[in-house]
Amino acid sequence: MPSLLGDPSEKLTQQKAADLTAWFVSQACRPGSNGLPAPETNSPANLEKLLAAGAETYEVSGCINCHHFSVDEQPDEYQRHSLALIKRKFTASQLVRFLKSPQEHHRWSRMPDFNLSNEEAGGLSAYLIENSKGKIQNAMIPPAGSPQRGQTLYETLGCIQCHRSLEEARPVVSKFQPVPLNAKSLSAGCLADPAQLATTIPVFSLSSEQRAAIQTVLETASDSLFRRNAAETADRWFQQL
Image (cartoon, rainbow, N blue to C red):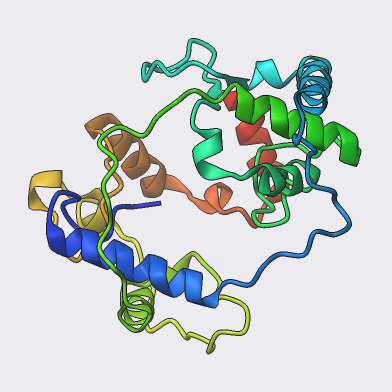
């Protein structure tokens, strides 16, 4: 996900983010529970039972191979992802739904489906949230957002290039035209030197080594980079592991 709105410290950037959020929220609908019960934590006994069951599921499923709970911002030695902020992202019931169907919203997610039962997902959800000790540093109070301005931003920023329009929303047609890659364009756009990026270019925060690696691949063949080839995508991920 590139940076599209500008300097995060500027009020205009914060207003744009608030407007986009307001539009997303206005279009959202309450997800169905699909028959999944919310974790019962209304008593200390229930909570203790859930946490014990969740700890067992966490261990048996091998979650520790890909995750940890450290709040340390330094990269993990084994390239695992921290769950320290998971309770800032999910409610208990939302996390249960995610654990039951990790690919529901993003089919390319690397999170596997462990075919958890309702009880296992409920216990694991409670365990993860209980052990999530991270805090968002310098959290700000956003300004009030406008759904109307947010919809305009969604259309003009090119969000549709990577995201589907929301359910029940007016269909949005992308007005962007793909630009053919050639040797002369490999140092322009997203691959340009950060100091020379235009304000309308998405910022991916690439290092000089990452830009050079991308340019090298694009100079030869890039077909294998597209996700339309599931076998090559899987092979690339296995090599990273």
